[in-house]
Length: 173
Image (cartoon, rainbow, N blue to C red):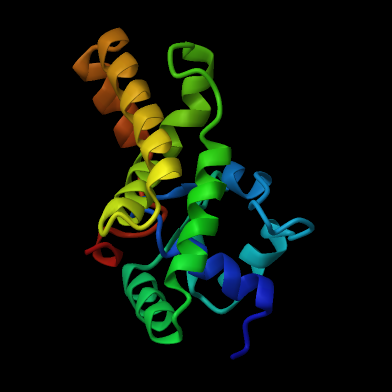
């Protein structure tokens, strides 16, 4: 009850993302329908209550899996799952902009790929939100396909290991 409305809304949206670090650049993307929201201030609020942690290097942040689980359950109880999921899907879709065939967009698209996949899979699970989730999944598959073709497996592993969690391993499930 101590979170601001903006902090609560951000936390509820973050609950649909993958359990990997979230790039801070996603906070620069406006949430469709949430005009005027300061997502950076909302993250400050969430971090202040230790519901998320920032990476020491400052490029990413992450929500603890228990916080994520509790948030998803509270959304179900309150009957707000579909509303927040729709917002999150539009938000990640807006952030997942660029041509996956253009290597210059990979630094933006790659850190969002797992999040796009997680949100699209959740939206698609009971076929809740089909049109936007299908487009997001298609974009996600395309970037993985192009990235996989252009980069040897060893390079892929190096990039993956650079995206280390911003906490100790015992923080992850």
